[in-house]
Amino acid sequence: MLLRDLHVASVVLLLCVQCLHGSALPAVSSYEFTAYRMQQYNLAQHKHGCRGAIVVAEARSAEEPVLTRRCVIMKVLDFTTDKYLEAQRQNAAAILILLPQNISSIPHDTVQSFMVSERKALLKETLMPVYVAPEDEQLLYMYDEVKQAAATRTSSIFVRVLRSMVTATAFQILVSNSVPIKGFTDNTIATLEGVLPGAGEDVPTIVITAHYDSYGLAPWLAYGADSNGSGVTILLELARLFQKLFSSPSTIPPYNLMFSLTGGGKYNFLGTKRWIEENLDHAETSLLHDNVEFVLCLDTLANSDELYVHVSRPPKPDTPMHSFMQQLEEVVSSRFPHVKVGLIHKKINLVESTVAWEHERYSLRKIPSFTLSHLEDPKSELRGSMLDTMSQVDFRKMKRNGIIVAEALARYMYNLSGKGSPKDVQVFKGQLDFHDGRMSSLMSFLTSVPRATQLLDKEPSHILLVNSLEHEFKRYLQQVHRHAFRQDRRDPDITFFDQMNPPVVMYRVKPAAFDLFLGGCIAAYLGIVYYTIQNCGYLYTKLKAAMKSKHE
Image 1 (cartoon, rainbow, N blue to C red):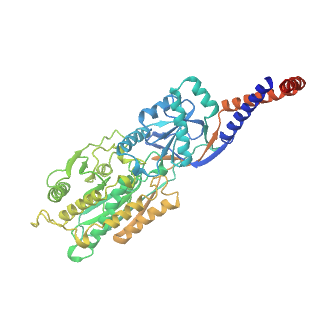
Image 2 (cartoon, one colour; image 1 turned 90 degrees about the horizontal axis):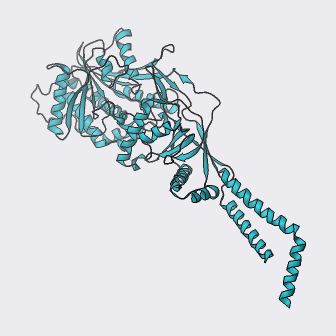
Image 3 (cartoon, helix red, strand yellow; image 1 turned 180 degrees about the horizontal axis):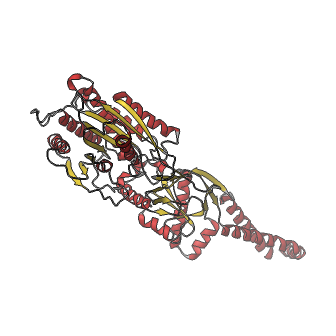
């Protein structure tokens, strides 16, 4: 009987060990992937983004009650302001956000919620490293495992301990670097300008401008489709269409039409500031020195049935700006009555070190200017998000907004209302119509690479983008210039930091409790074997007696 019991115990232990060995992952298996660190920059004496980069921590779900010294894994759906602040409060080691490959698959409400949380996270600095990585099979497996582990906390203590010892998988996240994070101020901010000269000498100038850079939680994942790929796309299409009008002597208006694409727009419009200074303070001759009727800034125009005209001071009657706005409203009321047009007046607070809209840079220099946008609030989360991709663009509405701007400009420059033209007259039709395919191609090109300011003069593909924009200017405009502005290193306007896309290693291991449990099983098995050997004579006698009694 004793021998049979020992045999059964041995078999059970062997099966247990074999089962555990077969189901266990390798002692240490690793997976390396690229993650993108949260923005880190200093602007106007204020620090933004995360100051940390090194991570050595176990991965945990945001649902876990204890996050101290853990790397919190979140999907876009999980990332909220409350969870972000809770991770900070508990001194979490890091946050890793998994970004879907297909942004269009994210529900609209989730996109809006993430954008709000993203903007709030960027307002202040944090020592906690925050990384974003595109989803893949390995990372999703890790997410599911830590999510399942968090769900078991509702089970009994015995079930949790048993699962932890036998089936649980631990994930270690490692981001290491022997070199400390360094700041750099040698960025070059490029601004492009080009002109369509009007008929006559000393004619007034109208300036159309847009900033071309993008912004988001992680610079390497900021593609800026609506903000402000839409403004750039409309500006380039306006340049193409008005070039056709200016190319015929019979249709050249008595206005210079100047176009500019500025960099550094997401960082206090630094490119615009330097370009204005270059033209007004340093250049001997410039169209900005002369009679500027107004400056129209295009910003975030690829959605909504609302258009807002943002001004620093309400335009007075009989001024060029007031007349243009009347033409704008006339175009909308006659051709697009469902579109709402509103005027928003916001004074410039000289105490603040930053400006809200691009036109404020011109207003500070007493140049009449305004911004046209479908956004009512300059602090809208739509102006800087990783989720601002092509999925956020309504091409039909972007084209409509471009038509509104073009028709209003034509009415104003050719004085069509004063000449008795019908209110619903269409200048841009036929060969002068907005080209759907071209606008789609321009937007696709603009969103093919991230346009964050700190990348545009560093990476070959980003430098190529700016070169391509310059090429577009040269196709349709005259007197094209590219201004490259460098900061004063002794007193920089903005400081960026490196180590924004380090390699991350995920180690997949069994927890220490598993090793203890497995060691216990092996020890028990060896104990049984040892006992059997030590008592071999006794067991043989018992076995012989049992066999003899069976034969009798």
